Structures are given as structure tokens and as C-alpha cells.
Length: 321
Image (cartoon, rainbow, N blue to C red; front, side, top):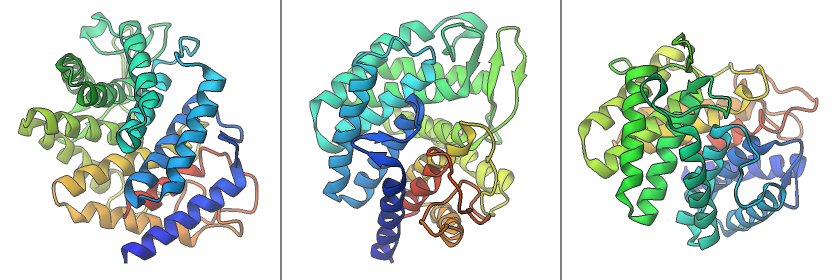
């Protein structure tokens, strides 16, 4: 079974690469699109061990720093920078290649002071205009700080991560049921919309804090968020939504990555089974080129689809293994 699932994931990845990729560049992918596709390649290497994915990591890293530099102060989105930090820190953990870690750490040390403030009680700003504090920067910020803390053995990164997670729980989550809100505005208004990527990074951030501190409160938060996502947002059925806008279309790979971490750590096979159910549905709705759009229960048409929207299924293919 595992070999068959790996073969299917490899096939979907190869079809995606054939369609969208050349020399480290993904067609029409912006900064954060590329960072998240980078993470899917991390997933592929971590799960399969196939050295071809290490080669892709190197190609994408090289193209990324050639385009954006080694420190990304020109990007006004603090969350974009956090996502790329995570991708490169994970790449270092998988390969041991030092430049990936050096780039990740330099950018975390740059963006954290830029984004952190006591306004609204703490947390991280989404952008440099300091108008909203969003789950999409705070939860990835927790993950990024935990990864850099783990690699560097510097406890101060874990302290920062813990503080931001406590603010996130207090401000942007219903802790008992595991629902994660989108953001709080400068005027205190809260957007209570929930999405797969915020649910996913909340799970991931809490699990990394649990691994470090061994405090069951973090594991319990991850458990609640995983259950809410599968059982309340989707009622155990296939994810057949998030097909609007430029960003939402790529969210599901992020959820799958972190819910898999929780499921494997805590022996919760029902979540892997649910991801597999989604992967099966997605694969059955691929088009003639092997491309799969983000609504997994809906047939992918024979048209050009956004590079980010078609990456989500590839991520789920690996993370259901």
C-alpha cells in the first residue's frame, strides 16, 4: 500500500512539474506561492527519501534567493517571510545543507522585530502597515521560531513562540472546540472565518511546542483543532471548497502537512484515512494532463489553472502516506 501511495504521489508531482516548472521557477508563482510549493517538495523528500526531491530543493532555493535576495526586507507581508523561513528551515533539517538554515535564521531575526508589538495585547502584525494581526502570520511565526530554536538550541526562540501562541489562543481561537479565527483589526474587530491553512498551522505550532515543553495543553489544543477541521468544517467528507481568490486555493496542502504530524505523533489513524479519502477523490478527478484543482470532489477541467491552486492536491498526495 505505501509503495502504491508513493508511486501515485510521485506521478502527481511529476505531472505538476511538467506543467508549471523550469529551472527552479514555478510559472506565475509569487513569493509565498513559491514558499509553499517549496514546502511540498520538503514533504516529498521527508516522506519518500527520494534524492530527486533534494535536487529540486536546491534548484528552488537557488532560484528563490537569486530573485529575492538573502534577506527579504522588500516584502511588505510578514507572513510571506515566515512561510519561506519554514520551508528553508525544514530543508536544512532534511538535508543538513547549512545555507538553508542560515537564510532562514537571518530572515526570522529580521522579521520578528518588524512584526512583533504589544498593540492588541501582543502577537505579530500581518503587514508593515500594522493594521491587522492574523493567524496566518502568528501560527507560522510560532512554527518558524520553534524550528530555528530546535536547530540553534537557543531557548529564546521557543519563548517567543510560546508567547505568540498564548496570544493567538487568547485572541484568535476558541480553544476548547479548536476553531481558529482569521484576524483581529486594529480597532479590535475580529474576523471569525476559519480556513484550512490557519487550522493547520495552529495544529503544527502547538505540536512543536508540545514536543519541546511536554505540556499536554499544547497537544490538547492540536487535538481540538484537528477534530474541528475534519468533523465540523468538513463532517468527515472530501474538501471540495476554497476555490476562490489567489491565496485560498492553495491552503489544503498546509493543513495536510500539520494534521499528518499530529496524527502520526498521537496514533490517530482516522486523520490519515481522511487525508487518503481526499487524495483518492482528488486523483479520480484529475484532468488528462494529470493536473488536479483544489476542489477535490469536482472534475478538473482541460483549462489552465493557477499554479498554487493545483499544488494543494500534490501536497495531500504525499501527506496521506
